[in-house]
Image: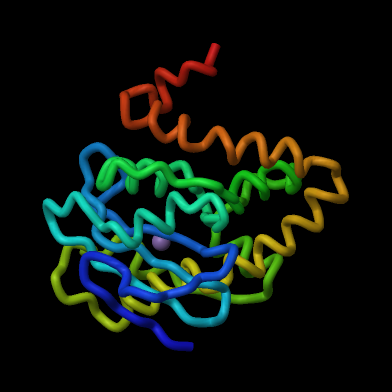
Length: 204
Ligand code: MN
């Protein structure tokens, strides 16, 4: 396993195949207030590529081309947040999307536990640490622990997706899941425009 670190954009010539796992780290949980600090990517090959985003940075052409490439699936856990953070930073529409959290909610209806750490432990048999989750992602120098944590959030998403696809197919909910994924860019924009949780337009 190798973790690569880049500044401000992906290098030229990286090929992530037809499905790339993506995660972001930000200054906090409000995508309107808290800036994007790091974007992590993995082709599911055991390697992670981390892109550090500078304060005030508004462009990352190679990264955005990948995020918007219709031939490459972007695989997230809780895409709603990351897609909003990426749109807020770069004005990029991320698609097509697969979200392992939504997939889990559609098939694992006997439990409320849909966190990444829990799902990886239950469905993939991998234990990841969440210790660095709320560390200072705005720091210019990321620690080794931060980089390892950031990488672990994308390294196993392909395996998790595979386990969830089996259940979505078995329960005949794959088409419904896809419809939910397709709506995520609009859901993210509603969040950024102020229609978040208390004023959700789908709420009664
Ligand atoms: Mn993360």
